[in-house]
Length: 135
Image 1: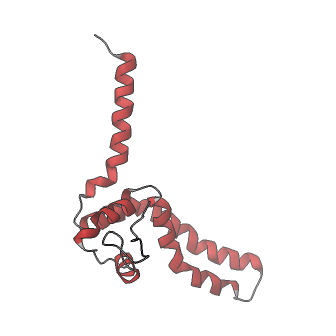
Image 2 (image 1 turned 60 degrees about the vertical axis):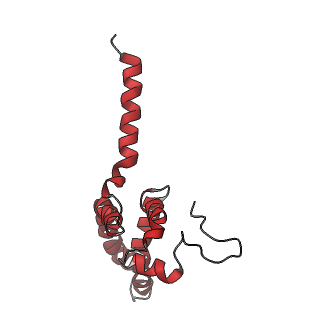
Image 3 (image 1 turned 90 degrees about the horizontal axis):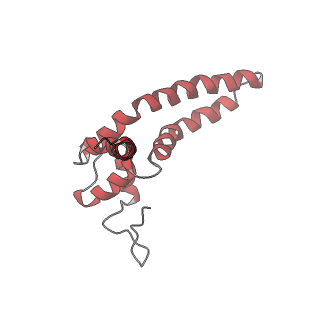
């Protein structure tokens, strides 16, 4: 999927280094030569999974800290849920906005977010027309 490694194991021009990837995750755009990687990251297979993992990872230290709060287990679990539920809700609600922002900030067309939806609609439309076409 993201096979950008050179034969000798180094980084190629199509896959960001660790430092570039961290900067990318913090909002910095990648060089123009990595646009295809950004496109695959934002609209390629598994993009929603990567998006949710990136959003939840920074919260893990806080959730671990809640595990050490004195009190019943149910209280600790509820404290974790009070953070996780709104986070997941807002992540889901803002996923399209964030993906459009990533595409735009890296010099790509923000409408690529709708590419798979538009392709599905066109396929459904052509299938409908093939079945119910009036000549």
